[in-house]
Length: 208
Image (cartoon, rainbow, N blue to C red; front, side):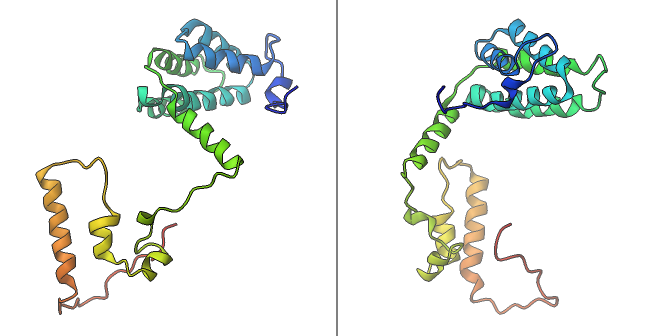
């Protein structure tokens, strides 16, 4: 057997009706990919009635599917699936209402437009790193928030005019006005002689 996924603990469990766990997980995901609701629901229900632990695995898989297989087809899918995941916890495992939340989540995912580009990007990145193809830090990363950037003399003005540039930039008058107001204030700040009566609150110089 190939070393790839040569050990999967889910293959070592038997479901309530005698299936191997890994086959139910695979049936679930491949059915959702193809929009086959009934097959996906059957696999999910077998996982659900096997154990609370396998139900948790079901929901982790649905969360992954919402990004891995749906992706930009519906960017709100992970939010909805996680919402259903949280709501189902309000019901006991043996409550007859609890399964409706995975039923609805699966039907939603089956009917969603799908694309897998983020998964392709992830796997390509993993392979590149595994082969020693490491990134070079680009010049634009060096700003007032890095040691090297400060050594290069890059200050707040550099940050506002260069390092904080975004693309694509939303173009709207109020957005432009807010930027220009802040930039102007920062440029004049060094010449200000105003002093507060109370010591200003100090934030961390680093981010947790």
